[in-house]
Image (cartoon, helix red, strand yellow):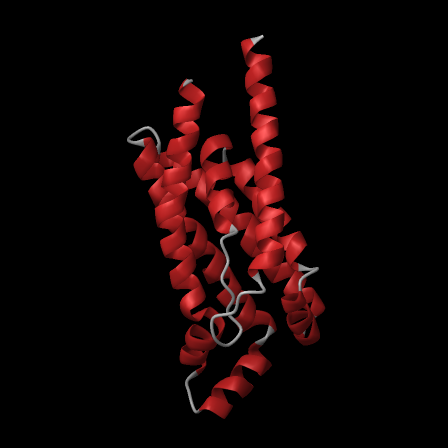
Length: 192
């Protein structure tokens, strides 16, 4: 009976996290902070799911984020550059960000669960942004070079300022602050 209740609790929370990821992925793109960067809180439930239920849960939530991105207005810009490049980059970055967050959490949780959540909250946006940058270099290099030339900047500088910008800093800080706090709340709730 206890195992059955735990499974129901897990499925319920994963359904809620999936819905939250979908909403945050869709509406996060509407709040812009310069250039192409948009404010996104999507990685917070990804980190939470990965910490609570493991790497596969994180990968699932990252995949949901990727799929929802395809119906946002931002997707049209990227599809205009390369449909396969957009699909590959978005799906791999989402899945690997969640998977890596879960793997890191599992490695560190034996030492301290809360430190594990914080490190996962750091790893998730780093992986997400790192794979995005790799995708830009592989699939969107003509656009990146043209933009860098037009701005009189290096390619690397252009990528960091116009494609990553404040979005990465915001995601990182939001994850470091909110993911451990939400994890702590779920732990308190579990004890009751």
